[in-house]
Image (cartoon, rainbow, N blue to C red):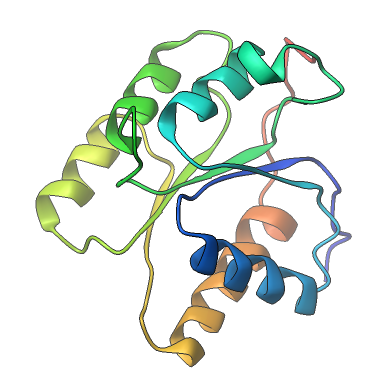
Length: 152
């Protein structure tokens, strides 16, 4: 098994229950990455552009990966994805869509807009654990991200 990196992880999730379950599963899987959470699309953009409540690197470090819910209040996850993948300074950050939507149109649209992965949140707790474990195994352990030219 590869050594886990401890780069920041940004989770865009408006559901407190879903976030708590996700956080608990990651703790059980010994994920060492600092986890930051935004509860709507506008806060995701503020976090990444270091605006509003996130106007400091101490508060908003550059995440190594973004786990993005599609159905966010405010700026929708689809729009967040599109905006980030069009930004020269942010487009290299892997964005994994993590949503309840299994609509093929959503899947296709997200990949067209540059999503690096698309995971459907299972309702079954065992399946959810398997999905989160697959995310951790690949994106946090096995995957080699590009070296950022704009380290912040």
